[in-house]
Image (cartoon, rainbow over all chains, first blue to last red; front, top):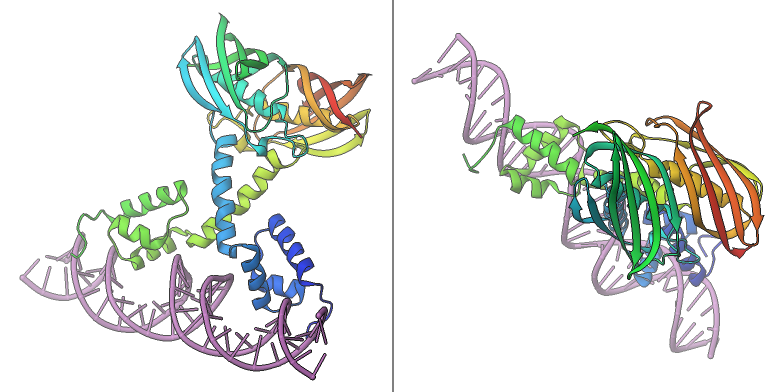
Length: 189
Length: 189
DNA sequence: TTATAATTAGTACCTGATACTAATATTTAG
DNA sequence: CTAAATATTAGTATCAGGTACTAATTATAA
């Protein structure tokens, strides 16, 4: 026995999987040092576990999140805008994913629903930039990851630079959210 | 002239920079084909522009977004929890960044503020998973990117599985947000 | 003790590079 | 037009972090 302090193959592979799931940026060499085995062993482990090489892992992380981040904070609207009548109404669709939900219950976290509503409300009003002034919202029933949220917004009143917008979100015709937004236009178009 | 349809060096470099900013996943070889120049020319361009190699670029994207996504949707709380009295009160801090704001006005988008408030509210109540039932919120004044949001939450009433939590967020002692949350505990701890 | 499983060693090869030298085009100035 | 300067290309050696494969060695269990 060359390297001391070894653990069994199965345990090593289990830990390996965990470790790489948590931090995919580790080379085989670093892993071999961590587990006190040769690089070849690590490579056999990866082969058996179907874990791709470092570069592939990094690329996967990059590609996956490249999309995600762009759709969460990069774009100005959350959800896909499928209909828009500026100053009047609009409809957007948001496909919920597991990433938006609590791992334990699979229920979509409220702020994602809120974000869709808020960004749709801002899209429909005819101003370059708006800021949510006041909003009164109600989550009517929980949303499960995977469900498709259909948001409908309607401008109900405009007073000066204040825009009153109602947004209703539903899953299969069942309303899950409603909100009243008062948006203040900062700069008119 | 070997390859036809060339553009000037400066234009090529300008386009190169744009292209790689938009899509960092392009190899030198693909770039050389796109611009109709040799690989060496592309490498000289990157050198002059200080653009790292493909793998480095991919890694940067991966690392940056790894953090970001984890802090936006991966973690259960948005903002840093600095004080917590389970069932009673809590304080969290969120350092706002440019990424959270509208590019044009530098004003932080409402849902980030909401997210901090909501997640803090959920943290303070003594239940494993909670879902926002109803919330009445008010944005009192706009927040600029870079400002530090201090959120204070207080549980004001508990009735069965319903928890009433008030959250106030301020920047330098100036209140910018207040919200009343009614959280419904799904499973008790 | 011997068969079997696990580990290690070693070689050839791959991609997408860096770093460097040298040659060849192309452009510009005089 | 021609020389000097600039831009581009070619080619070589080297690197990291691997794959794919063969063979040998070491542990473990029957």
